[in-house]
Length: 154
Image (cartoon, rainbow, N blue to C red):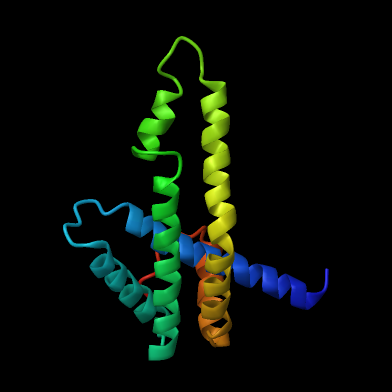
């Protein structure tokens, strides 16, 4: 594989991990009592401090976080009313698995991902492409650790 293709793929993978971390944190508030915009701003600030982002980079990260939040909301809204967990549990409510309902749920969620992904990818690329090499390396290091917490020293 050509070197530039590998770098591009690693870049997108790294950005996906950072983006997933932001989206994951937005989804698991664990007692967070504020609104999602305030929480998202705190997460952007935290990631921004770890990567030592300038104002323009923070703005690009904010756009990415907003796109991820919109995608998350669309996923929660896909498939009709109710939260995803109750939708999933409903598939097992009868004596047999609701195979048609499961297929329908998968199709609906897949359509949401397919529709929203281009915007998320574009925002992720815009953010990652504007990081300097040291910041990109921090993202890669974060991915290497399996997307677990940022280290206290970097």
